[in-house]
Length: 360
Image (cartoon, rainbow, N blue to C red; front, side, top):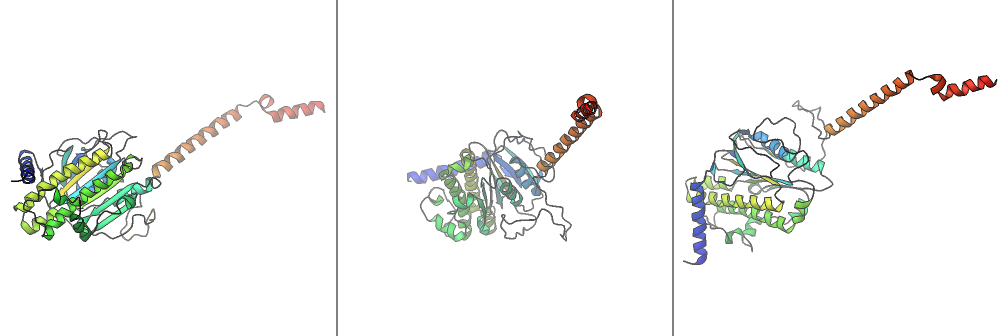
């Protein structure tokens, strides 16, 4: 047995032992792999609804949300500190993923599909001049949204399945470093899973080349959706060796990916993983650009929707409020002084008039 074979066997044994020895993420879960100290996640089994995950991401980045999130898993943090990045990874097709090195893990209720489009629009509107990185990627659906500096940094990132599979045959591919075991390079489902692993590897590699992105003042947002395990479970079944090997590989890759992102952003990044066996309802997305201008309100909506919330409302309200208070106080002070003024001594008009009368 060669040295490389021994290393692969040891790696596979280590992954198997970690799965058996550690507590896996059971069922639909939201797991926080990395978070800075000022973002306080509390350990506990408090369930969170799937549609509230975007609000949770917004709160961790220091943004306000339209509806208050009454959930004890996240404590209020410092007002003037926010993480430099938030990375949300959705893994479909698993209800038992081993992620032992985590900050906290919570049950996920009502696992409906969700997007971070609103959070991305908030980042763009508040930090338009700083051009933050906004990347939303789903390799299986060949869906990609990029905004700001992401257009320049990730322009070489393979997006389509054809591009990703071509990347797997190039230098630096994950195929040369991962123990495939029962996974095959000739299977479409296996290549889909490996292509998603390759995308995670390429994202960290590109960020290491462009370290200046993690040092600016604008927060970055990453949203990744992985469905390779779901395809493997449909093809082979969850008791198959292919599915078990892929789960072990993905667990190890996600832990390494979270550590790399956390380190690249100077220990100031939040990395969450959402694991869902299946979504309860299909998600219909309309292709659009998040740079598209929108009206603040939509009074003609046939669905009786609420007005679009403007995040500058609090600023404008405070400016108007304190300006009105200052003007009201000024009027009161001026009126009081005029009421108590002695015309003979305090008014220059009366003094000039009295002197002219005496001279006449």
